[in-house]
Length: 260
Picture 1 (cartoon, one colour):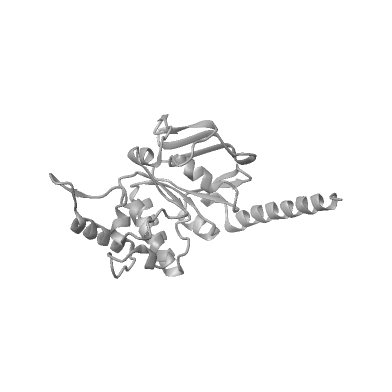
Picture 2: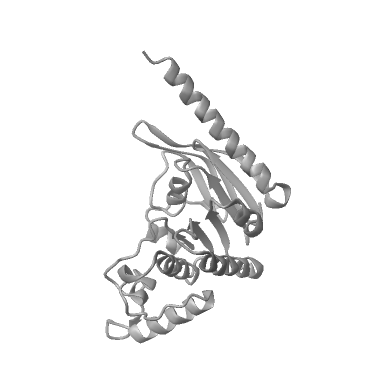
């Protein structure tokens, strides 16, 4: 408990008749990388949105560094040290690379309320260089960029915030193998340094085993597996998910058989 930075107890969330999460219990330790797995619609993104203040749970409670945690908004969560990369990236197409990098956290020159564009460009270049992503122009609107480049901006923006808990929802989405490897290398460096604690939604089981300390599996809104990655394998994770798929197919077939 002394090293625990985040705890979720009994969290449930409904959207009308749809139950997205059921009695979720989750913990994150200091310096840990926790992999979150699950099929599409299992509830992973909903859980991440609750953790970062975008959604509010219907039931349950959370603890942040041992204190009650009830984020009123994304900005409130960020002020408490939790930042996120969303699946939809939360980028503004019309704004430039460096403007998106500092979206809602702009650098301002004092005493005049003027944007410190030169400073933001310099820090954006340093952040992207640290990841190893080549971005020819920091002034280009992100609408012109590839999916991988957009993803890199979102990841770099979160990593270079002042947060000590990072929530990465599909950080490798739309990335090629080379770009994805750079992001995984960055996560490994952060892990080795112990600078931050990370919850990362992934679909690739090899990435989970190689990059995470522990894995949670969400099935139908419930966490059904909580294991250290050194105690599981790609084969075990695959077999669990394949079994879930077979049960879903069987249930669908049985339902179809009883219809008039």
